[in-house]
Image (cartoon, rainbow, N blue to C red; front, side, top):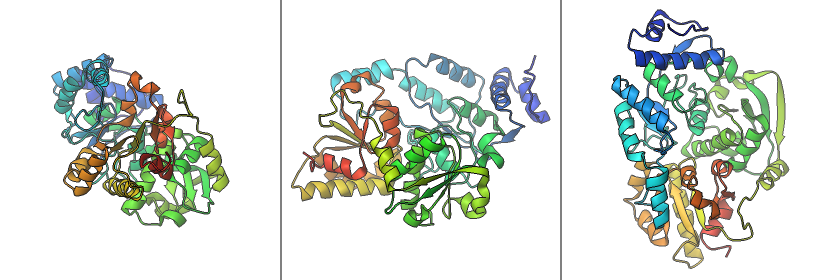
Length: 431
């Protein structure tokens, strides 16, 4: 007996639910419908950007139920017809230095199912081995929805960027839900898929005397508004009103901080993001809250971050840059800053293990440059792994990991440093 749904379904959707396209697809549809009913969705709407993005990229040995579901989908001949991209791999022995125990932990104990899982992903529609990144919307990867497109994605920072910077529509889905929506081609209409759900409950005024760091500004807003939509005014003074590469990189890091330090799936920036440019302050709900951010407020938020190292007085040993993954522009900038910093300090090597994370296609193109050779010679490693997955290794808990990513800080024991602070450590200026 088919699930007795609450929302309105079309005859074609009912047919899938009732098993007329197979029992497995019926189970997939039922999961999507139950998910929608739980959030009081009114209907299912078509996924108009069929290329999906999945969050579960790691072959963690404990995920046996996921692998069984994958096998069931494959046996039924189901897949994402337009293909999908996926979050970064957890492990990269070719480009990151690991000691023998680390290699054993990552390749056999933690992610021993990685190879077989990737074979499953390929059968279900994974586009290629170059598709592992949290920033699938970069032109080098090409999973770029248009304004108004409905998506079935997961990965908080990618959903945040697609909603805010691209003007697409997607809820903050969990792992497997995003795959199911991509397979059946429908998602429940609620939350950020609705006009009402995209309105802002907070007006945030940026009143700083200099350009705010995106990681700290996004953190402050995420902590304050939590899952609500903020409408940010005053930021265009510092980042301009055109979506240049520099502006998009800023918004990527800003948005990732709002999504991880809070649960923001969409933000509007006055005169910058597409819906804010189109509708302006009419996006604000009646009775909206207000939050003013000045220099003192940013400093207060920054000083509130805990240091969770066992020996916080000691120097850091590993620096991660690129969570979410660095764009090609950001990678070039970090390369220049590190090399210039080493040269000015008359140093040949970085002061600690330094790992820059960027998508596979960006890394491959960069590997053909003289700058890459100079970085490698200085001890910098360029990889496409997920820094969060690196820290899932319990052996790393005793290491003093540093980062300029508020997302990595939030989800691990890594210590947050501002960009300039971290650069000074990497290049030995703070020894």
